[in-house]
Length: 545
Image 1 (cartoon, rainbow, N blue to C red):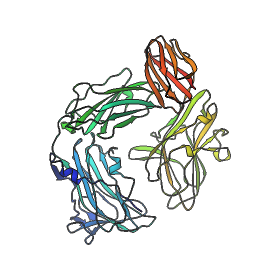
Image 2: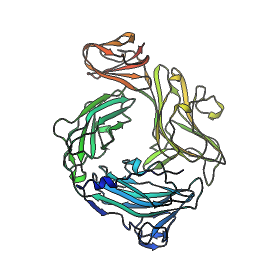
Image 3: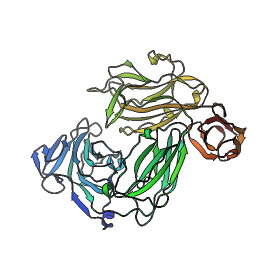
Image 4: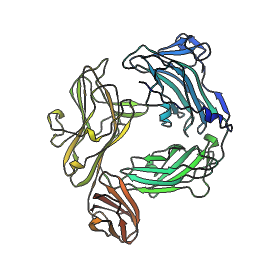
């Protein structure tokens, strides 16, 4: 059974007379004009497209697209998009063929043609159309993100159940913007909070309310020792995730109520401020009066053992091993992102066994260890395995050594090239030296394509409070039950982290004795990270009973 994800918002549009709908920006939207029988006028890409005069939604013609072994694209890039403006995006499609299915696969783009991630659920859904004996309507109204300057309006046709040669029909495309502007948002969001989770900080808030709701939020971040300034009306602040200058910025749509900053420095304090705004471009209107909500969190003191993002086109300190078959792991770039890719398909499926192996990972003296990574895959075939070895020699072909299968500890993609994040607890291997590996296999009958990215192995060592601190800090009693005392001769901040790397408590430390309430924590080992105001740091293992 095929399904298609779409939103019907016509009633909402009718109920909001404040807005006036602008002119349709799609050229040849009804497909009435053709250069020839396979080339619709003004369209940029038209795989397997043919002029259709019988199955039409309106007018004289529609476009018929035939499915093939790979996805078939039908596209038009639209210029002069204004950030912060609401746009209605719609088209009609007819799919009643068991050898074809369809979905929208569109993007906002900046002025250089780089894809933006906004509105992924609406513009790139994970589900497909289903056979239906009538025309279906895709309709959604979205706000162009702050950096948007173009819109790639693209629909695709796919084979169904490995059947090709079927048809999907398209007609009456529309991309039109609202022409009015809104006043400044009435209020700030509430309950703005920051929580460290490994080397990420999760931000949450409750959306602003009032007579004028925001269309989005600007979140400004500053590392300890740096500050940010309030934004100015009429000057949009673009996304900036480069922390090299001590600051960062991101724009988040109204309704999200959460955002995560990842890849942060160890044992570092970060402060975030959130500003609601309406409109976009030269009309952007930030709320800056009063006190904008702020939130602060400190990342834990983590030791990084391996970190590979493949952006330089290499495997970093990981090593590919081709055991059998002609195909092999490669680095691959798509939509500006580079990752490791493995597929046994080349003009058909082929039998393969290929490994991607980490460097030696020494967890001696660690009290927690984790492996995080992103993965995606598509097409039928054997699953990708995640393995651990304590006897691998670091250079030989890996298949002759002993490997534990820990694949069940990871989160895996749903099989439609949808990236997912996985965080694997390696605490079973504390005190040991290990190797991690991805093992790919395929057959002559089936070969999936697997992609992995952002391989990150980290852990926490218990050094003992005071051993890495220039000041006197003590924790007692230890083991503790209900509370423990932390004594310090300087002010600072305490982050208490569980063995998975999750920060479960964050509080200020005063000079003198501090009683830390741990009555809500479960029994186990926790890591106390103390950052003192003179810049010195201390780490201790705390046993909670």
